[in-house]
Length: 293
Image 1 (cartoon, helix red, strand yellow):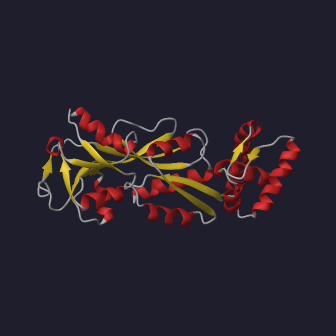
Image 2 (tube, one colour):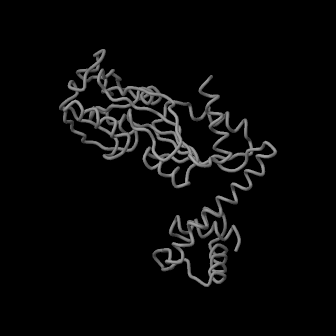
Image 3 (cartoon, one colour):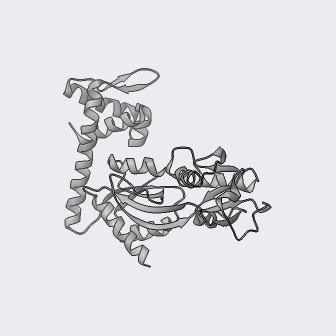
């Protein structure tokens, strides 16, 4: 049994496709299939059920894959720990970020990280705070940058606060309230909103604030992209509540107005609570230095 065979099995399980797994492993499909077949002969068990339309794990495969993942992670950790003895940081940092992160300048942060650790690689994943936090708990990501409503800290992971901002009302330039210095949530009642999908952390910030104020609102447009929401606002189709840094960074022609009783969003960095990898520890150290600048 070889580590490369384990990698192939894990990739096929993740993609449900021998073709896509081969592409991700940079090998031919025939070579990948040959290695998995050899492993199945060694185990005396079929790991996958193959058909012309799909690939799925057998019962033996379902039992095997978690251990294969753990073995690959252990091998990577052994390599990183051996390098760390000599003061080197190697391996791939798996970094998850929300699309609306504003607490840090991510490109500048990664420039500093790569300058300090040129042998390290970075794999970026964009998602919502809930899925990113779960990925850290499951061992699929090393470090994540999150945004949660005030009073809701990440669970099952180590974390610390990066920043806190009160959301602002984002309005089209010609809106009746666009010239206001500030507004209350009640001033926005009855208006058409664009917001993040229901049941996500991004949506929960505004939902909780309107519920606490006893105000109903009409969320006609749901999108998982702040840029798309800003486009809807600029077109005069809706208004939104977003972090002020998101509007500044976007350059979209909209107006941001302070909401006196609006919700607060807290940005966190979170990581594995038990045993962060050396690439994660190095990134957290760079982040701490970056914040002090």
